Length: 420
Image (cartoon, rainbow, N blue to C red):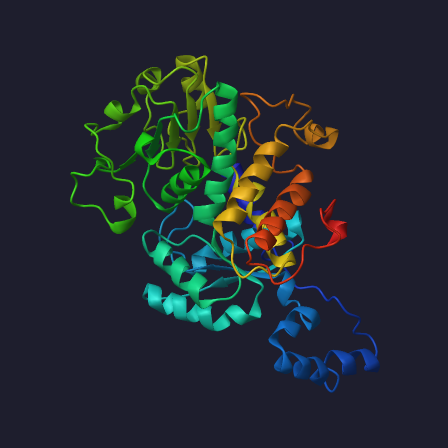
């Protein structure tokens, strides 16, 4: 980041008021009567109603539209374990995105925790305040156990976006790329470079979408994850296969698709040249991808490529998913976000990319052409249709899979934030 950009970022976060979120009132509080209804004695009536039936909290409080964005700061962006307080700008940023894109109220919570169990206990005790919990920037492998325990303990959606948000958007783009490349998902060979939380969740969801486990090679810092290794934790061991491949050089030969969730400049042009016809490369390391698009395209003219960056086509961006996934889950009071809801989100995002792009979206990107094809496999984050498409698909899947506690909303699909 340039010196000017660094200063601009600091200025943005500090002026004219520190931080990125605030609290607004939803009821009048001007007269003595207003105050008597808002607090004592009027507030006693909804208290009694909630005590009689906890579901009334959704009727009389903001619980149903409130998500907590919670972190322990152990894996902040690409910066590592810098502590809970240092994660606050990121958590505030997530809260900003929830509100901006899906009208979801959100508050950030940073938890100082010596162990995963302390974090779990803390979140479990405050979970009743919220309609949903978004876990963020928690390192692997602890993040898997933390999420699993909280899903079991809470009756509201608990969603680790670094895992599942990344996986949903990746899967949507990958399925479209396979379609454009003329490749069948059940036959395609995938190489995944990286074995952290995002990589593992991406591969799990891709398998749910149709990839065959035996056609996937995953690599960590020690090479290919294969069944002869005795140094694998329980999460990596799920992806161990019988193979003679040991390095990326071995694995990449003839592969149809490459998914990078690792680090910069780890895929070379020579390695890319050994991939199958019409190769698909998702180089998602941020800010520097596993291979630069310029280099990749100079090596393979038949390439379909995505990155995590906004300055190249096909950005894999979690904001395409999480605000609208929570919107749909909240609006049917889902008790969790299950596999059916994730796949519904994948399909909603991928199908939206096939529709004509509104002029307002084209204008936001300086009028560049956006037609379904190698340079446009997933929608842009500013596409207003994501709100209706993804939230309605998720809500419907929640109802059909039995985790919803309210009916599919009559005002769905949403057209804009004004419908909320």
